[in-house]
Amino acid sequence: MVGGKNKMSTFKDLQERIAKRVIGWKEKLISKAGREVLIKTIAQAISAFSMSLFQLPKTLCSDINSIMAKYWSW
Image (cartoon, rainbow, N blue to C red; front, side, top):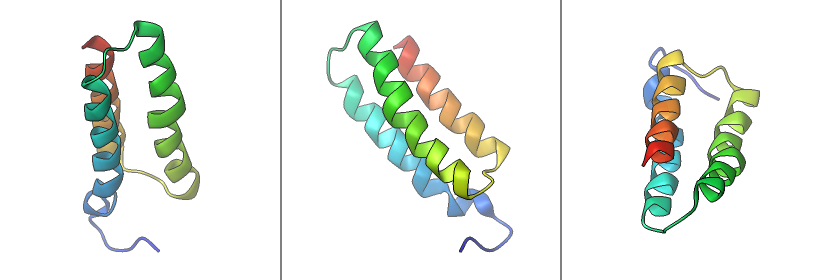
């Protein structure tokens, strides 16, 4: 179970997993439609599963959203 007051450090692994996936995608040449599919299926699914189990901090959700937005605009 998740414990303690500092939940950001607890869920830091989730943010790193998403960032690692997105960095791996940046190395490949993918169309805009392909990027949209990757974001919707992979990045959002990882965070949605965690959100179904735990309440994530707002700052973590903002960080994940900014990672996906940077990938989209790349």
